[in-house]
Image (cartoon, rainbow, N blue to C red; front, side, top):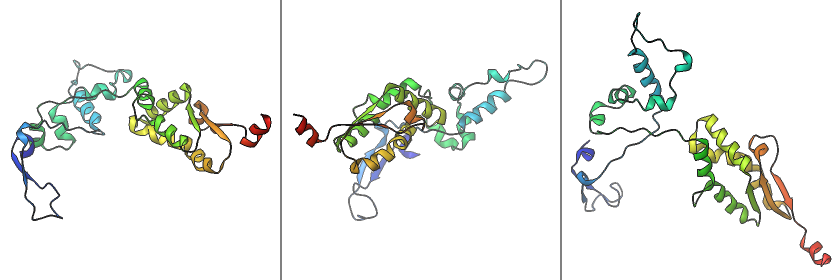
Length: 213
């Protein structure tokens, strides 16, 4: 708690166990901005219980239809300190975090951007692995859409993208080193859905190319 509210902490620069005789560094945490984050699975149920209980009972109560139920994102936007305490965090900890903010769930469009746009995007990582075998890897747009939709359905967010891509490519990555003349591997929607294998495009063997010339 002292670290968050501001104190001068003695920090072992090389770890405390292996080097017990080392000199400690003095770190003033009052100048450090602490940002605490997490998924908080189940917090929406705590908020939902509070919101529904607070809607009142009797003749003056507001009756909500099942279709009026708030989504997980809408519930999390209504989080209060008492919800976090009921969730399991101690009041002393919550009291030292004056600002509570929620992040919206990633959309399909955002997941597709994560798949292909960053410098170390997931699709680029797998393309680099295939390039080591001299093979091009192509993800069609429909495949990216299918990956994002599957991650949304599983509610795994961006963390679940790798497992989906890995499942689609695992057998091909295992077999590729023993295969000859494969120039390109194409991934479409049916591959992501498990309905077909990746499309392998073969090139002409060098001997055939030489004879053809």
